[in-house]
Amino acid sequence: MANIKSAKKRILVIDKKTERNKAIKSKVKTYIKKVYTAIEAEDKTSAEAALKDAISEISKAASKGIYHKNTASRKISRMTKAVNALS
Image 1 (cartoon, rainbow, N blue to C red):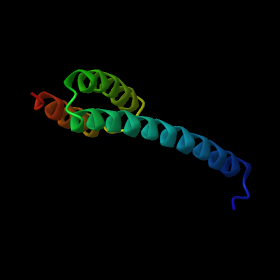
Image 2: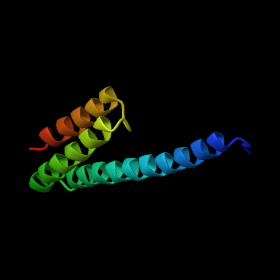
Image 3: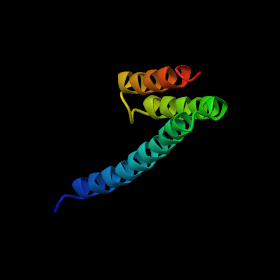
Image 4: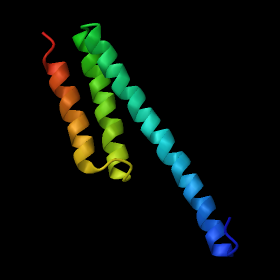
């Protein structure tokens, strides 16, 4: 355990940021899951709606630095490709 005051504060700040990052990552995963659930059900309209929401959430997470921009682009690209493959 840290003894120096600034180190104790950094521990608190890191814990707060970690919780925030976990919450946002979890939210993104939920949106992604909704897209793939709609794809498995072969419901193109709901898949497209879910894709739009998921892209928005992933972009927000990337802009906040929670996901690297290439990771965000890859996730968006794969989902878009899967939705477009529906007939």
